[in-house]
Length: 423
Ligand code: RNT
Ligand code: ZN
Image: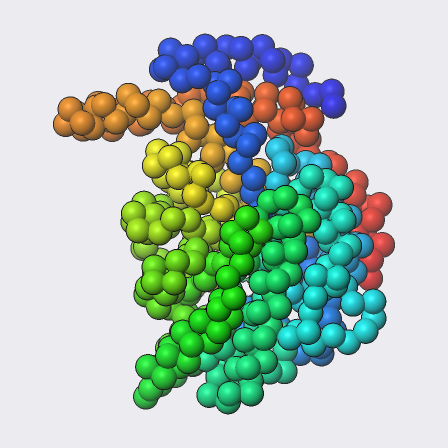
């Protein structure tokens, strides 16, 4: 790709010198950056629609707003859209599927009967790209989730159905891991909760713990599949009570040795993921992040390069946690071009990691150890105006993806040629 910016390499050389003056090895930072996969979530491409046609509403407290044209209507369209997005994002990444994206060849297959074969085309596609897959059982948009209760439902038959769904999904995850040579993270999130205050907060949680134990009963080699559980503070329709709250899943993950999934939009607005990472990793081996952006009461806006995103990336780097943290994106916005939404979120996540990798952390650590908080604060603020953008542009150019806003034109062309023709 020829860049419209002729001076990318000149700017890079100068910027690299500036960082070297702070003791930062830019080449090492870039090498490290290239090895960090971000798991791109399938559901941004089609507003969490999936391909089952159950006739059920999305439900589960999930609401996608906007009616921007061009939503992917078929798995082939979705794959083409992701291909487009990936061509505009530097690095090699992963893709995160929900069970509702199965391809059953027009046959109705219930969620408790799904098999790896129903994801063969996804596997082939990922394999051809050298990309890993992650997975999620789908506990919403289904008649048996219509009560707003699934694994915690008081009806044992409904619970059994959802337990069996969880069981088959772990097998599908393991098949992904085996086929692609990289462990699949299979993440359980359920919508269970109540709009108004329940009398009995205890029983649904006991049932959830039992259901999860039944799902995870069969050991699966961690080389192929890793189980994660995701809590939440509240959802639409579960404002007063969420069965799978943070405390529930944190203690569950600790005692059952599963991964914990922390979603950036699932806490009180003044709580931040960046402070939770080192806390939970003091006890847990590995975690999954759902990098998202909360806005007031809503949790799933497109990720931008916010202070909190930078803080999350800094924690991952400063704590040397990258080998223990699986980074996934989780947002859905139907009011803008959906391919662009992926590109914006993923590029911002990578930018945040790059900024963190370009930090002279040992120097800052030293200042802190000496109790020199004045210099720590002063240096942190000086670092903010270092020419990070020149390093980022070089990274994009050397990764053969568009430099700067050039990717926007690529998305616009794709919109005119492909997306606009979808009804
Ligand atoms: C919902 C959770 C969950 C979903 C996806 C679609 O609040 O964040 O991760 O966004 O499973
Ligand atoms: Zn999430």
